[in-house]
Image (cartoon, rainbow, N blue to C red; front, side, top):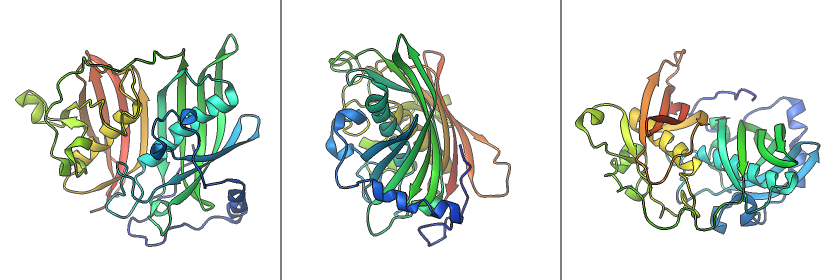
Length: 328
């Protein structure tokens, strides 16, 4: 994955200079359409409003180009500090695009289940500044590891460059596992643990406690450190867009982001690099514990680096390295 160019968070320009060979590719945006969204089933979303992918095409063997539009005022992935697009829009775009590629080009049936095994991205802050129109993003994908069993796809790794108007905006890598058709009733009904009290929304960069995924730990010892309980709310319209048997990967990524924000409060943070591994499915009916550990950044910058882990039934289910820029 190509390393992102770092820029000042106070740089007022929405784009970055690129070498001539990169700028020569800007005309490629013209072969993508941003006027309508992809069908919901192709990106594993139930609500049309949550579909980011707008267009897609195959460029060659195992290479693809997709378009995504990022709204300026998403009701959950809201702008950070009123200035930058939420970098988790990059993660959700990667997820949606990978599901679409798996179905459209590798023959995965629509009723099969995708789970995230690994997801990483890095972004250029200057390329994520809000503009006068929704951001039109181009995702150039290469499949680097395609696994099949008896002809059926079982796993897919895709690497992507993210470009905005021809300017390099970041890069990502995502591995999906594919399993047999899911039970339509999976995830419906009760059996969920009681929701712990939410961390105050402002501590985790939220306005509404309904969007807080970190809960106050039950023991006094855990409350003294960077420890929380995962708040599993299957009624959340974005994080739980449709019934599911396990906690969606994007919920764990949001927990990682909120944990970093809580650790760095009162500063607002902009995640610029995230590298996550999903070791075990997180069950809906069992408490899950989230913790954060500060790491040395290895530079004199003001960036914060933390490792976020999720434990369930004494098993490490998820861990993530997050590097975030402090933006006031």
